Image (cartoon, rainbow, N blue to C red; front, side):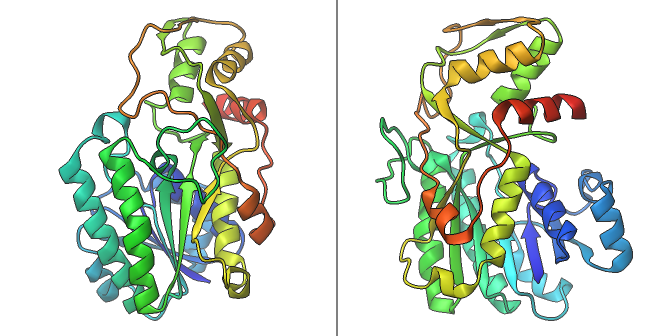
Length: 315
């Protein structure tokens, strides 16, 4: 398949590209002009080989002008993965103007995908769309996002699906839960824990009593590939285009933190309840992943502790 991917140097984008290249696909990696993170794509063996073979193409293009992609990508493509989205960090999630700009650019990206001949459009939604829940979250669970970020992602689910239907493209909406692993953002909980515990420092956290769920980045990348490779007939009649993408291990956040602490040989310490909650509050993450497992045959393979060990080894 010929696949276009925005947000190509992001945590999720780079992992998805590596997975797709390793499985023989051709990728057009859309990056910001003068991107300083190209090493995430070209530094890996899969990227080096694909560049030599002509299966990896670096396309410089700003997210705000997706219509220009038709001038930079020759020939038709099969699928489009839109991972490019500004302001994903906790501090930026309340910025309404930024999130509105993300939504507008994402809808324009659907139109660019149509112009490129894509038959499938895969969008990276978020757990933030669900809001506060105390029970298991299926794709049919009512959404009540608590941030401008979650609201914009949810609006893309509705408006993006409608636009894709109008243009004759299959719309697939990933609701991604907490991904972790090598290459993660330095401000995430897992990375903050690893920095503190390996550096023998104290880490201030919230109460960490809420239920949580993590997915290892390689498992997430395999889910992306599964949704791209699954035959069209499997999606017929589904109605709801949303797929929860998460791990199969849900427990209290404090239990995850304590496991990281043990794997870091007990260095450093945690100060629970010493930090105020993030922009979306102490939400519970209790995802149901039965749908994606049933439709694609994918399932998470990496236990949390195993993923933490791999992340430590990569440092």
